[in-house]
Image 1: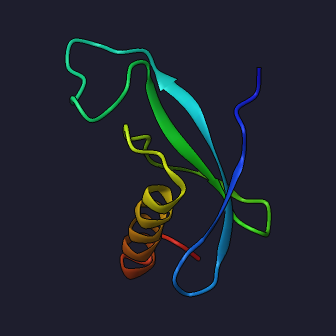
Image 2: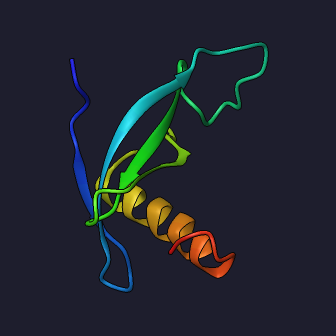
Length: 83
């Protein structure tokens, strides 16, 4: 079954479609804040380009997800990794 997609709008007004995807099954070390199996957010921009985003944390409420994606996007832009 496909994961539900969630639209997230970050502080600069950019919108992304996000969904969870299993990246790997748990290994010997899984941080306590990361559910098992290991999920990451797949972040898709309006131009259709999808990127592997931040880890899915236990709190995936809409406000928490907006903060997480906003911070991830802000860092990617600052580092020149988002064009």
